Image (cartoon, rainbow, N blue to C red; front, side, top):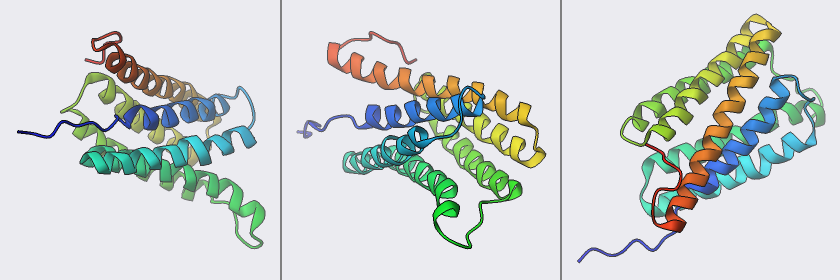
Length: 187
């Protein structure tokens, strides 16, 4: 007889950490407000540490996709905060050039696209989160490579949509499990 899985689903924690932090950062990218400690703190604690915790819990559940996604994006948020903060606190360390930052964002887009291909075996909501995230990374990279602020603003609005899609999926998983039926469809 198979052992019943009594472990909680860590995905909503990771999705909320990703989604809320993504929305808040992309409100900045869209030009709504400047970069500040709120975004950096969210990047360290909710976008970063909460997703790493979710990734570790996915490991316990045997979910390779979940481990890879949540751990990687948690570390993305920590590295992004590091790219912003380290040049301000370590003498002689420069902020990344636009080309370097564009390359960083492009590589995250490439990783995300490869992860998206694995979502094709999952629900439509997860597919949307990943394809919209790949597009977000590539738009941000393009904005860095070209220096075109309009592209970054467009990326900001696209990122807000991406972040809210992750929040929707997180809440759908919580509500559907809580009520034992589909309250919010995920396809």
